[in-house]
Length: 140
Length: 192
Image 1 (spheres, each protein chain N blue to C red):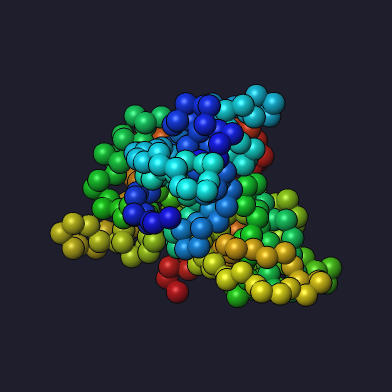
Image 2: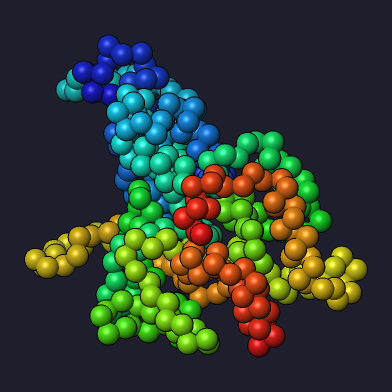
């Protein structure tokens, strides 16, 4: 076997979920076996518990478009799309060097990083759908 | 392509063979194969002398689970020992969070569980089945061991090392409870 390309591209959780869904994965464990294997089913069920479960292509595109001003790296965008931060602490976990990156705007002047983090969180909240109610109930 | 699959339509039979070879298996440095993404081309169909199976040259793409360093993942705690925590994503369980990559001030409690003592004096325990958010610190692909002793842990071809040292990391419950407290903590750490 020859490896032509070790990394042909990165996929978000949502894209993997969409792919597995299109292959026929379902939550019903008996229904899964025909189209997809048990291991693929496990991945599918894991992804259903993440915020990716009710995302759409449009919402992901919208988020990428609206967050252009923040100049995020692909890795940061992936983390945010996969886990939908809802608080400043979440944002700091998902974006590398968040405080340092958000403390200067395009012209190089110092700005209030908290305001920018809040603005960013607003965009996330508006563009990406919230995780399903069951997850929020567990957190409460 | 083994003879018993020859009666099926070619693309399906090839896909089944590729799945059998790669699905749910780890390829060194490339990660765990989750699914066959697509088959791009099939060539060949020649039969080698002395064999009953036909040989094809197939070009295909595999969907791999290979988190990058710095990727955020959420899993469940399935074990702990004196080295650290063991975390599982339901389809992958070889994830460890060593003691030195936990929040500053996390120690092993008297009953063996890891515990974080906060500035307010709260003792936050990391329990089994708790949901935990961590950063991927590195991924190791140890070589297959030649001989194993009886009580060695089962060989794990892909081991992820995670970190919960940082804002927003650790048990989900820690950060969801009081968002304002979390923000203050983040600001204080930034100032330091």
